[in-house]
Image 1 (tube, helix red, strand yellow):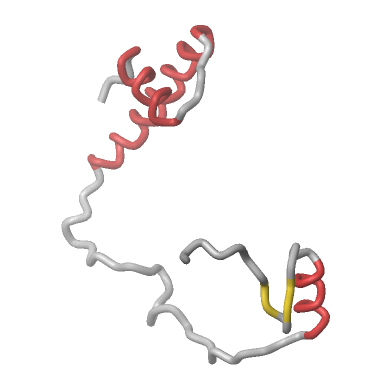
Image 2: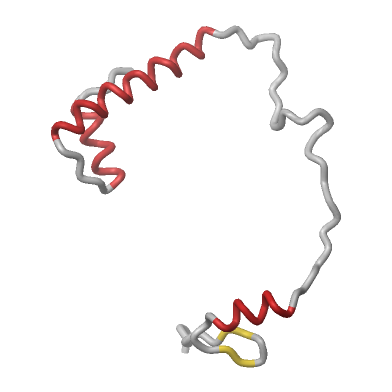
Length: 96
């Protein structure tokens, strides 16, 4: 894949960033190097490798899901809210 001015302009529009003309040239070179490196990965033969979702042997270790509550943490969170009642956030009604 070639990184050209059209690609840079499209990325600039998608990211809602303004990139100076000087920076665009540097960015083209940097992105071209990254894409070139990634294209090198296409040359690796992975036909004998089984697809996996994790690198941990035996899968992801799980832990018990235990609910804990710390009053000082709740109090700190509630102290930053504009309105609180009965330990709940009060927000403006959006549906009548």
